Amino acid sequence: MRLDRITRSPRPTTVEGVFLPALERPLQAVTIHPMTRGEDLHGHVSLVTGAGQRLGRAFAEALARAGSDVAVHFGEEATGADGAVEVARSLGVRAQALQADLTDPQATRDLVRNACDAFGVVDILVNSAAIFEPVGVSDCSLEIWQAHMAVNLTAPFLLSQAFGRRRDGGAGSIVNILDWRALRPGSDHFAYTVSKAALAAMTLSLAQGLAPSIRVNGLALGAILPPPGLVGKTDAPIDRLPVGRWGEVEEACQALVFLLAGPQYITGQVLHVDGGRHLL
Image 1 (cartoon, rainbow, N blue to C red):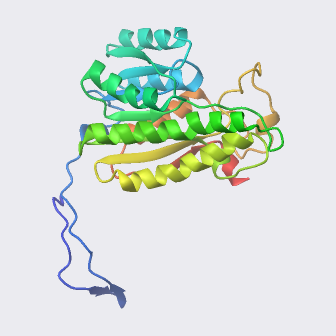
Image 2 (cartoon, rainbow, N blue to C red):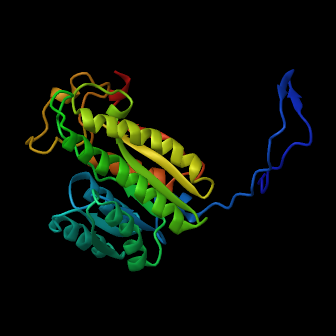
Image 3 (spheres, rainbow, N blue to C red):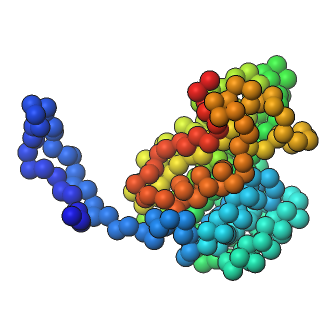
């Protein structure tokens, strides 16, 4: 049986002696968007930040494989972004590299406008760009702190705000790339961890503030790629993981596509793809 509309109960009811108050307001009819069909993102346009390198590039290319047109953001070096654009276009979708300094508030806001100007519309935002420095509390200068907050927290806020205004009631989806450290903070990577913890909290607030048209979720990753400067994967980060291995880039990409192309009824969730690291 198909339920086209759910309306408010006229009076409180009871089920097996349990008091159930009436809903405060009627629920709107739901039209299932084509985004719910498997991994099909055809007809969608995605803006992926930090898409010129590492996981950001992998995310951009994964969305292109799923059929989405892609705005590939990069900060300074265009080589990786150009490579992602080439891959995306070879898959038959539109793609364009867009430069923006995410420490500059106006440039950050303009990134959404420029992406919309290039593609006509953008209905998916993936906040992937991040600074990740192994600095503890004692060694964390104000400059390092502010740089992490600017890119890891303020930029996703400004981008999400601009994205919501551009959608103007239209359907859309935002995924913030988080880290298992966001829910299990430690003393290392101090500024990074605090910025990601704040981004996790903001994800939940955005899911409410941009509802009902825009869904907002988080993807908390674990040991997927070695940190910059570390050559090859070592056993050190995974000694105690329940799954006992490093994650694969493709697994992170599959999770992202699921959050975007999967059930529209998912919002305000943080999906951990970390081999169980957040449990320890």
